Length: 221
Ligand SMILES: NC(=O)c1ccc[n+]([C@@H]2O[C@H](COP(=O)([O-])OP(=O)(O)OC[C@H]3O[C@@H](n4cnc5c(N)ncnc54)[C@H](OP(=O)(O)O)[C@@H]3O)[C@@H](O)[C@H]2O)c1
Image (cartoon, rainbow, N blue to C red; front, side, top):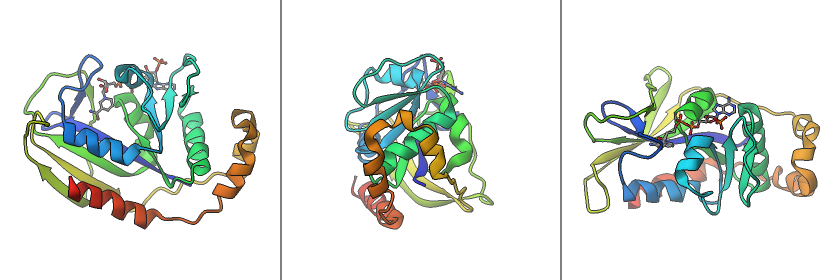
């Protein structure tokens, strides 16, 4: 199945990710990285994060988790529970021949999906202590995770604070499996897309290539 990857920016040392439903900083370079990673892919987010963005992110399938129906709009897909969000993310990723999709927050949604995440891009922002009401409160113990890549970025005209981006990988990845019947049972969700699904599902894995491309981009920033 496509890999679920988290992307998050949190303050150091308090692990704050948001205040009053917005980001506590502007980091142009980090946003550029976020855009490069997620463009053309499926992203899963909570309703509050969706509202804070103010619009669906272009050129991405925006899966929005909410218990109340989210209005249909181009590139927006509503999921009313985490399992449906994952099924939709798998399906749309397969249709797009993508090997990854991204969990982009906020706090509630990172917590819901942390167990199925094998890879994560964490931006640690050197903001010092700040007030906030949303956190990304996870540790990555060496016994379970390893830091595959890290890069420091200075404070600049584009970036309010200096920061570090780390790419962290779970040592023993969770393998998610789905039976084709899971898709079929819910095929009303997917309507006329079955032919495309059958073709795209056959495409072989290119995960190593994707990772190399992602890290090269980080290197070039
Ligand atoms: N720094 C970063 O990298 C980053 C990234 C993203 C977001 N953020 C920040 O994080 C904050 C938002 O985080 P948050 O935790 O308050 O909100 P959130 O995770 O964005 O959204 C929470 C909403 O998701 C829905 N939800 C949660 N669990 C669900 C479930 N089991 N089934 C169905 N729907 C479910 C609910 O929507 P309903 O109430 O509609 O049912 C809930 O209110 C903001 O400040 C934002 O700026 C920071």
